[in-house]
Image 1: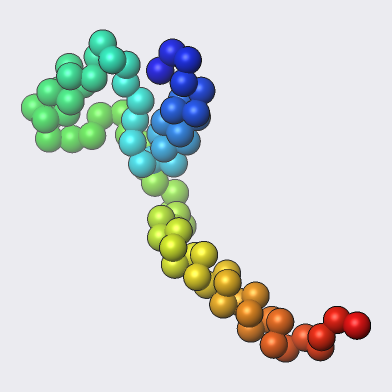
Image 2: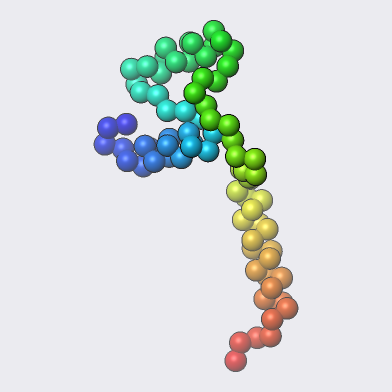
Amino acid sequence: MHGHADQFVNASLASDLGLGFSVTEQDVLDRLLEMYRQDSWIGRKPMPPAFEINGDVEAAEAILACAHASKLSPPAA
């Protein structure tokens, strides 16, 4: 990932959240083959217990909450 800071940050975040793992271009095939042989994801951290991956649902709920809150509050003067 030389020269691609955004990809490094995304890969690090995915790894930290237990959603994947980072490899290099040189070792990706060896790592995948080893995981296939072991029938296991090697080096993957467990996901947090309360991790929500439905961003669309979260966004919709936030929008509805704001709309509901604006109906309950009096109009601004």
